Image (cartoon, rainbow, N blue to C red; front, side, top):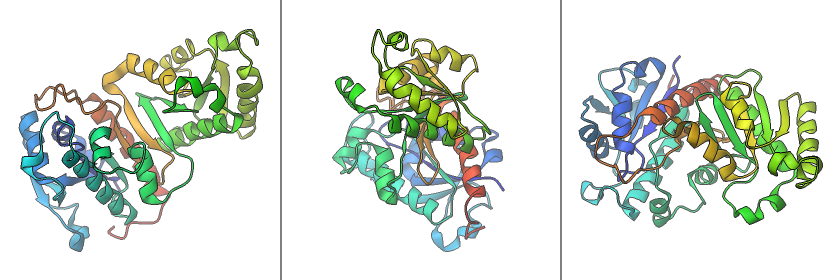
Length: 341
């Protein structure tokens, strides 16, 4: 059985609607998954106009979920979160943030009800979501709060078959070293291992990036590699995880690029982001890893500078779809059968 994926248009003021329109127009997309669109019908239609594509939709509702996956047209669970007059391209607004949050809520509800296996959304704009009352630092933490999930989770970035996890994320660089400990490194290693297994890797190969230049040069440039990273790596190896390092951060990504590693555990946000985006900004995917449900999105943002122009690159959106399909199939196979199956 194909995985069932809820696809959201994302922020209506950005390139999300256009990307969804282009994604659905791909000729082989229906072979990978059963798709359920979740969002405002007029926003999906706006995306088709921007992308100069056309495909038909049919409205569905909860009263007849067994019919969602049969019939002509792409099934649409239509919402009314934003009026056409409130969609202002390339602008931050409470209305756009409200649409993003409420459509995300509905997709999570559908996943929790067992009606879909995973979620992919077009890019959100955090500023708009905060204006609309998002009670979390970002959408990943918002999803966790909505689910009542308090386990370890984090944003994971993926480029082709390489992923990165982080020991620290959105904090000042001045606070990074003091925020790194063995347990944090272990959590980031385990998150990489679990995420890749969920995406189909039976035994992921994981490299840990150093904190200091030249991995500390045997303590000449800092002792964190000796005192924290090396012991954490040994602990992870005892857990039967294929992990190595610490490697200098200016060379570890060469190992990833050349296929010697499946994941790099980084110490702070930009250590991984710069490398990944330089290697393939237009192909990168963000995974909301560690959550009870599979969620992916393109690693780029809403791209207000090109919104509505029909020139958005589909690469990252298509890759995000491929990844969520793989993860959703794994999730479905390890969870109870759908009530609507």
